[in-house]
Image (cartoon, rainbow, N blue to C red; front, top):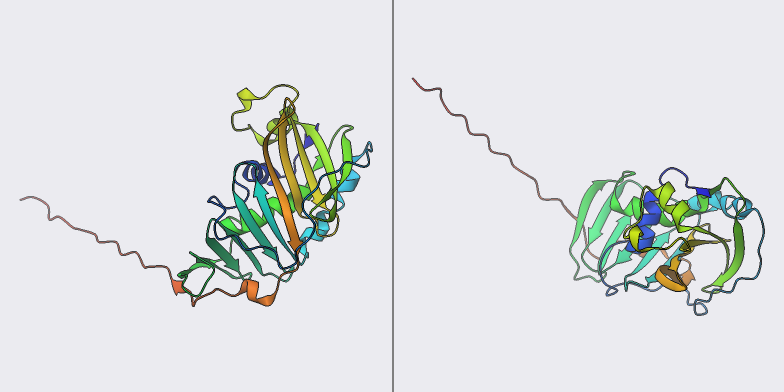
Amino acid sequence: MYKLAIGVAAAMTIALTTAACSGSSNGTAPATTSTKPATANSTTTTSDPNNAISSLAAKAATANVKISYTSALGVSATIIQNGLGNSAVISGGTLLISNGETVVQCDGTTAAATCTDLGPTTPNDALTQVISTYASLSTLKQSDIGVSSVQAIAGRSASCVTFKAADYAAGLGGLSDSNKLTAAATVTVCIDDESGFALKVALTDRGQTVNEVLATQVGTPTPADFVPPSPPVPLPSTTTTTTTTAPAG
């Protein structure tokens, strides 16, 4: 059984259902450095996945990385981080950018896009949660013996761990459509050995992939990745009108 660190449960829900931001694959920018097609070849099995996975957690906070993902549900996304406080997510034609202080949302990635300043960056904003989804998976904790492996994904070496979907659901507080899964269902999480970011999150059952979020390209961001394509405008102000009614008589 694997116990998930605080916050990772929600992160894995996102990973297994939406592959970052909701939306279609249109508008997703590829990583700056093209790599080999994604492959997943198990080569090593050990008895202590905790050492292989959780030891990568510290790397994610300072990783300078740009990763493009696809999912079996047809959603794609690109997450970008420079390890210096700047981050961005592109999915479904929507761009979110943070300089560590404020979040800007754009409805496209070209100069024709409309960008809006959403205000201060917080732990609960959408951008922070999406980045945390793929960084926090490296904080998986093990309470019993499990199975680990090493896989090659998007030309990168990744440390993986596979555990029962029932254990995953217990740590998560539930799985979507979990009543349709059998006792043989498993969840596999693979973490990039270099960046500490998840490269794969896969749910399988009865030999079939229920959903899989898979990295297809891994590269290095450029300063332009963190610049809104058009000047941000502030959120429209909300005006509340109060009507006072004089007492009768």
